[in-house]
Image 1 (tube, rainbow, N blue to C red):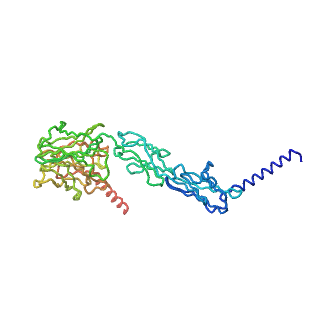
Image 2: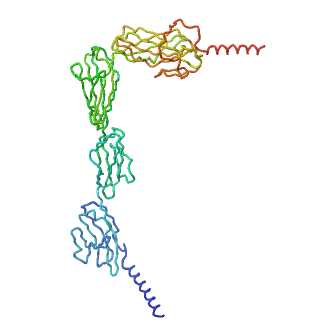
Image 3: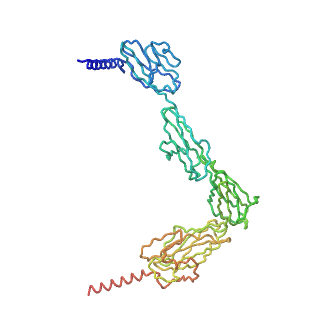
Length: 494
């Protein structure tokens, strides 16, 4: 073997020896009574990390992840430190644990020429903390958009939850740290919170109090107030606003400047009776008119104004009757008659009723100008009713069989007429076509009859004795069908 090959051989043998020595000199978790441990603890606590070897050993050392010596049984200066204590059995006590003590702790035990290793860990858990940007009170105008950023801290890293008035919201970015808020309604006023929770201690929260600025909203619950001379009347409006609105009252377009014994005002805060907190003004404003005079009737305006805008609502003080309502239980119609009953409210005696009716087209009638115009009757009221409820019945006669009719009522007292009632439709017996008839909320009909259904009053005389003409071709159709059947029957038997 030449000199070069000999050198290569010796180098290989030396490498094998070094590997064997290295493999047998440092062993992990061999012949240890203790097991690798991860200790989860809190700041300022003390932690004992075990390191118990089953073999006689000559030295115990503790190292950190960077191989810095933390304790050494052969070096007195490393046996007792201000925050670390090496026990005779090899265990390491870490006192007054701080966040920077989190990490791995390596126990090295020297047994002869061998080094045995075991790794323990400390995980210092920290309760969550959180701050938001911005914080405190935020004043935002209705329609505004803004963002809130949440910065949590803690070990382990906290999970973030956003809440708006105790309701979970999800319109955040991917990291859940940034919340975008679009102020669409004044009810969005309230607390917006970022809540951080990592299971250590109590969750932490931080956020803002959102106050939405908006123009007043005027709510009129009773647009028409009915009264009579000599009584007391109350006109009310409810105003929602932030900032709080100033209220001004007007009568027939003129400001009410004189508040006296005849006319006074009263305000009530409605938020004090609500279960949930309110972050805007909600007040009821009442105009009280004592001993109503004739000059007090008319239109009243509740006008509310703040820095965001102006709004108003109208209320009419009227002595007129309320709109009549047809009673749901009425007698069935006969081919030529129908009994109708209705009720109205009036604090003053009702004088009479304006009763108008007309035939309603069903699709079978031939077109004839004037056939479907209104007929008008004036029906005296009963004098023995004291009110405020007034009931009246009337028998409508001279109707045509197999027809549909429509009726509208108005009541009148000394102050004028009520609004027109909703239209009531009914049919007289004999109509063979299937027609759905009910009270309606409007006077809208098939556009084919728009010209004939002019809402103007048609003062044609009303013949209560009836009419010789049929109002439908239905009866003619039935007669012709019956005659044809008889002819066919006779031909068959011939």
